[in-house]
Length: 382
Image 1 (cartoon, rainbow, N blue to C red):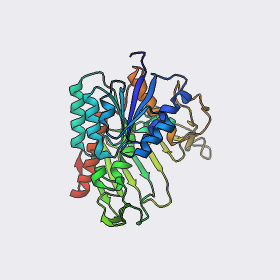
Image 2: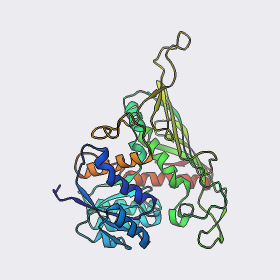
Image 3: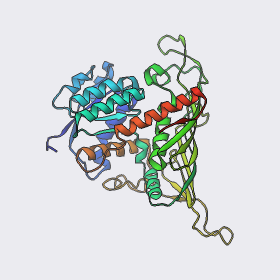
Image 4: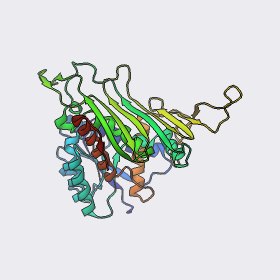
């Protein structure tokens, strides 16, 4: 590593572009050790007002409407991809060929074939480039503690699991067609958008998977265009349900829904094993609940039952000191932790994960889910 600060370029300044920018602006506050020095150099967006805002208020030194203006600069070393899925591949390929580190919002691309192109290009580029996909729920204290317990053998053999990611954002049929509801822009629907998170997290905890059977549904089949109000057909699914078996034989269900009336941003996981169980809900990310069959069951229940571990803001060092390990955490904090891991990997102090290869496998899994729904039968993931 050079002592010269890394120049950062972010492509796309919508919700995720702002989220990634927040990470850079706050890492020095949340962490007692900044793994590598950096500067926010370039912001790219097709909307001039978004570029202007990012420069005036968020510290970017210059703006552009074409991502290649960022990639061709020698003073930019890291590219963030925060665009709709259909634009991921060209930005990533240009960045890899230019020798830039890449941090990409999920999913990696709009389809598995595109993911393979990306992974092949990365392999041809050789060693030296650090890449990571922003699947930030790996970086919540409760999920990190869950992984530690599972790796230690706390659950023993895993029998079953149930998990889901639920929004209610699509229940209004008058909601305009956004890019995430447009299959031509996203490559898929809710299975790509929300399912990617829950499937990645399950795979990280108890995977890999062996086979699945799935059903997908689009309950609101026509929506208005935001610009004109014209009604158009919707092809992207707004509910997908999968029955999944792991290679170790565990059987469980996975749901992804934007039609979950009454819910906001709820990611639930529950895993049952021969020695215990665990569960968490990221709407209340401060706790991991665990059940241990080794606890006494008598008299009158003894000490047996689900217990809440106060994971709260207890991030591993050098994080967690600010604002306090006892304070509650939220959505943005785990994004900061995910980005910190990426920067630490560039500095040679951590391993970037999930990698582009892992994200490509995840994409294949999701596409097999769609294939199962279309074929109405089990599909193999091996």
